[in-house]
Image 1 (cartoon, rainbow, N blue to C red):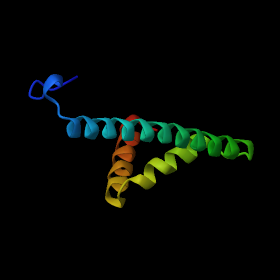
Image 2: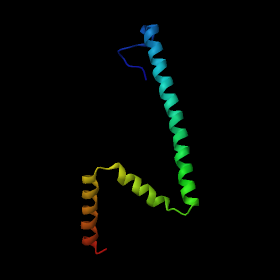
Image 3: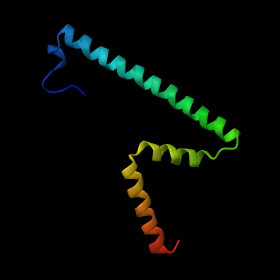
Image 4: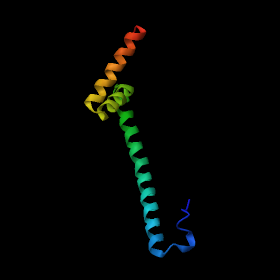
Amino acid sequence: MMSATVPSESMDQGTADRLRSMIERVERLESEKGDISEDIKGVFQEAKSEGFDTKAMKAIIRLRKKEAHEREEEEQLLELYRQAIGV
């Protein structure tokens, strides 16, 4: 959607070129993101075929993205909840 401050009839060629460039960059990155997603799926398929639990792998990956103190807080909260419900 075009901004009300830059109507299409007043856009100069330099601005239009810059806009086109940004749109093309986003399109290229979206394409690369799709390729990377397919590569990740392939790695998980390979892991599964070798007997690894991909759900556990994904949990480990999520944990590794967090800072140590965030992981500790999450573990403490989970333990508190486990105790509260008798698990």
